[in-house]
Length: 340
Length: 78
View 1: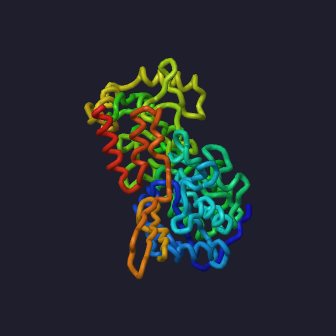
View 2: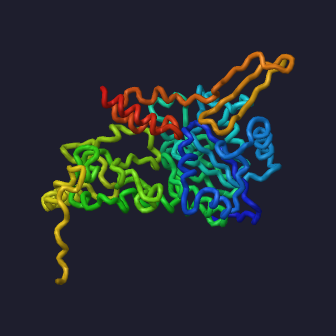
View 3: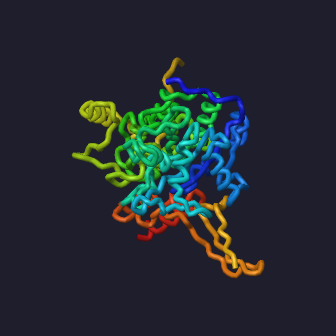
């Protein structure tokens, strides 16, 4: 699909928050190589307003929003953080814009129609996320999805001025690099529909699995599993880790320069997925049927997985068996057997 | 008497709106309103206790560690 290129002038970005925790902004502030402000400079993006970065507020902010909505100032990039709250009873009154009394969902929908690109920053804005969990009393949804179903606040056929659907930079929170990389792609006018997956996620991170680059891979290969939090083994069999199914480059890109959830001893809970926020079993436990974990890697026949796992378990070296259920390395690897 | 409605505010987590009653140049009453309701208090009902470790840090992106520690301490005590 051909996407109209935008001019060489500075791209104007507006960032608004609704039903969320602000954690995606906090994560973005942790950007490094480049840091956020360098990234903005490099991409020639001018932030018109961001709740945590800008001085503008009150009447001046509302005046700016009106001019953007009416097209007096071009709105190149609209970033929304937090879910859209449609309740109670579709009125949107669970989040009124301060100072105006207008439902935030209305403010956001009007601006989305005026924007060239619309970015949902974080799983709440993309799919509803944790804000839509439980009984979802606030009727929370994402901009163009509600969980896995397209629709959300703007409807399934929504396209922004660029002709693209909402760009869903999911994650709870987002990786700062996912946002700055998207800014670069947008500033170069190089994003088209084939760069997004079926849930609107940028493929530069969604074409990977969290499993890729997991440092516990040797334990996974031999099904040498941790039995309790804090232990070194693979967390898939007992501790609820679903990194083999979850889309994200967390263990390739790494967080804060060097870490990831699993490297920190925490199972992957699937925060980039459209279903994040609700699960039919406790997050930190692996549900099993007949002793076999439910929810194996999605693109492998179950019987093969079970056969392979049994074989691997039978072949597990003592070192991995013991280390898997230890909090520190109990048995060190033997001497390498190369040429003398 | 006149009434001033102030908002949106920046650099606060969550939304805030302030109404001020002003008489002869002096504020006679101030009302603080939070025009955002997320229903977070109800999300954990019916969930496994350990799920608190997933949900509570997401109450607030600024104080997520404090929320998580409080949940962990509560779970350890239970």
